[in-house]
Length: 294
Image (cartoon, rainbow, N blue to C red; front, side, top):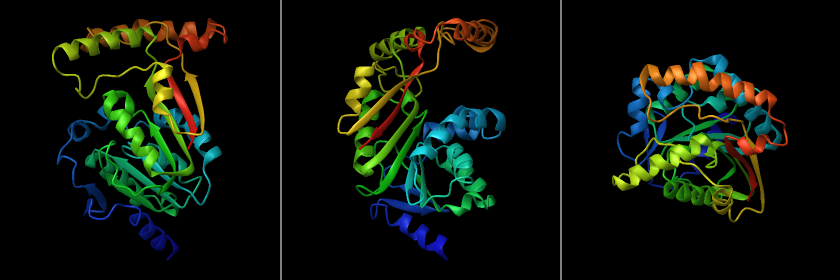
């Protein structure tokens, strides 16, 4: 009975008349019937996010993130997973840490369907009521100040910076005062080998009249990230990862790209990560992670 009451409360956080219920997933009226992420997800879920079936890789990627989320979350909190995909975070967080509510929001209905199918079979996850919401990241159909925590994982990096700015404004709108924002793997650093070639590629797209093309990674200066976080009372920006040579080359494709990545880039970066002093590691960080309080 308590779970049913709490689920109804989650639905009450939606802006009235902005969504329709499609098989237990609430779909925003203004989202396209099919998105690029739906197409990719139908072909292969690994195209949109880490494979839902690659248990070892997904769990390893999740461990540090889940540990940090647990440090900030309270049992009475409602968490909004911004770009939740198939629910990788929920899969590992909820069985160990039931909370008042979990909202998984993603533009891909197909990915949310994978989320729902797993959740419906997981009694451990069902200790936390879940609301699945198909919507674009820059138009969240949720009421103002409706959630206690927002988690963003590997979502912003493939979107144009104008879209990310609008998404951040939406996050500030839906977060309660004193609410927490955690961002992982979403702000790749511009001053890296990958960042420099990524900037050149973006310049080519701009010249070709395709600045908003979905897919290419967008890279950030720390000052850009701080500007996006304007309005938060507390902000911690952490430099994460270490890459010296680019992990891939944009002009390579197919087997050549794989040979470069597996045979050269990964081993060399692994070696350098072990010998570069900790004091120099931030200079080669891959991306910025965020902990911010509104």
